[in-house]
Image (cartoon, rainbow, N blue to C red):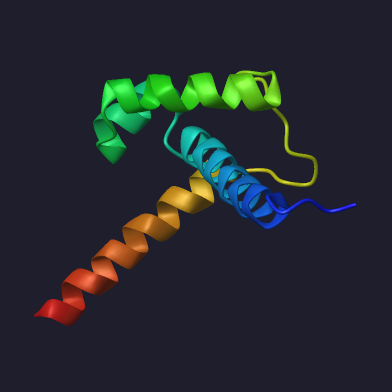
Length: 93
């Protein structure tokens, strides 16, 4: 039987899931803690907080966690990022 708070709990769970998966993708695309800090501009305390939440919910560190069916091709990611940045720069001229 559904309770009156179920819609709120479901909304919260969807947001939490999206945040954690997004953080996992960023963690791997940017090369972990140092990459998020130096190349993405995320503050150290934010990274620590997100890692703690990730570990609390998924019982694993982002380096250890595996999302079945999802892999990050960092080489393709960065090649596309460079290409997109160059295209954006050319369109501003």
